[in-house]
Figure 1 (tube, rainbow, N blue to C red):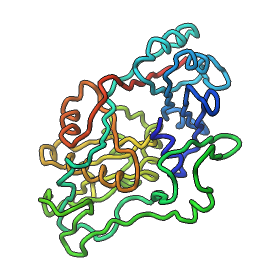
Figure 2: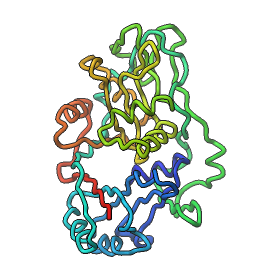
Figure 3: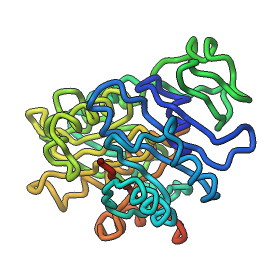
Length: 324
């Protein structure tokens, strides 16, 4: 939920409602993407609460929660039984999706080999245009984002002055055929072969990413991925023909995800290099650096823990699909 609110502050992308049960002493914070087109049904809703009574009150409100439409809801796994009970009372079938660790990077000291050396890498920023960090804004603050427009509750500079300072932050690169992707102090580089280079994803890569994503749903997820690529940071390794062979994206919640490497390019260290590169970029711009990893995905769990990501054993995230 914090990641969603952070991104609403930072990126002017999809319209999203950030709702609370009361203000200022709220017990429930509910993230609800506005549904303007059919493809918007694919976007997750997300709830944070520590009070199940307040959560129940929100879930049964017809003006807040529409049980007649398909939705996917992200919650703490401890609220599973409550949601199943309400869905059953309304005659709504529901399926619990995969349960995930939420992995957070708080200490960047293990990202010591964050520079990626690739022959022929361009000496300029290859990331998609997105909103740069606001040096004058506090690290957090709540927004109300709905029919009345975007309204700050407290502690943030005026939106007009913030927009005047927008621009995208270039990465400093050595202007030579062998370029460094900026990320910190000089260290032993991770080399790619001469026909590969590090870049970011663009719109022409949407179909490939969609076809390899395990949760892909054709046109619905096509638009979802397109908006991720166009609005949020991504990183990839391209072959000599400009085709991505390994990539990682950022969700609207700010979480890193969709990490994938084509089978013939695995066991070469590309995924690890991309995680390091994107993590450093997100951290340098003030983003929370975290991801979700399915409990059974031990390979990814080992990869991220080796880079300093940690999981709170008392917390698990799960996704509910409900469709009446």
